[in-house]
Image 1: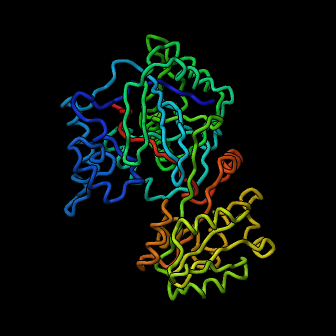
Image 2 (image 1 turned 60 degrees about the horizontal axis):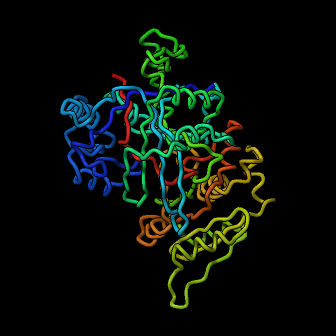
Image 3 (image 1 turned 135 degrees about the vertical axis):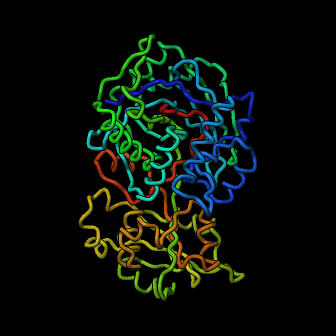
Length: 450
């Protein structure tokens, strides 16, 4: 069963800071340019904790992690960050325009703690692979700061919308509104009524949880929970304690992690594709690649414009969207090519995978194109040695045009049903298979272990 808890969040004091200036996108979506801008906008921007700047003379005793811990401690001492007086849940909505369209959606959820468990317990399910380097980085940060400053994005299914009705139907005004750099409106409601909290927790008791975003942080937090349980000599699955109001609390702080929960049966969820670019390939030539790919794919070259220019990202994405079934576009400096699979040719390369995996665009791209045609094995791809992952097709094409990449692969997004089917059947897709949009803001609430 899923065990959720209210918590006394550590939060910015809006009387001391402009909230818009201190929150950030998740750490793994922050580019060097974004990092610099966050540093400049406010001395209290959370970037100094979740993704601080490294320095040439960093040592084991003075480094990005120790500075993050010192910064967090200073802000708490100054009253920039204050711990809430009572346990709460936090309603959280995001209103946004779907990228590339004029469609406006609202995604609703709530922030709470949830008890950590191994995937083998079949309470929490993953849907994609992870990068070892990212997990070691987050573990070092968690140990230094003893705080979780970012939320994991969790999905669950509830066609009755019990939690949403309890949280959002009161009509109360949000206590916080922020519009981020992507023009997404974030709104937060603080919920302290014990009866309401208990209704939400009870509604979540029997839910299966699927990680949408935050696999690295979840796996790192779970490992840390095991480590701390052993150090403390406590049962990592110990029953929760209770507050004076009868609300549950984790048996020990590391037993839980802060998460945002979103109902898959509600409208508002958007999944974008994550395009791939391959770089550092030896003696790569676009037309030679297309010739080799003909053994496994139907290849159609996309002609240049009448002016002799390569098609732009909008034209290529439209062509991709208009192509039924599995398809992706390979963009090179020698030309752009639409690839659609020859089922009988690729079948032997996918035989070790389940039928549901074999039908995924991203799986066929990794197994047939990256591994077979480009010779990049799974370990190389996971290490990031020759592959980068990009949300914007325009950036992927620009990297090829500038010579910073040899080839870009534009792909279609995984659907919510595909992700759910893979996850609940205990399978995983390649890393960076999904890009849930928009991202959860970091800095709205924090969970401190001390």
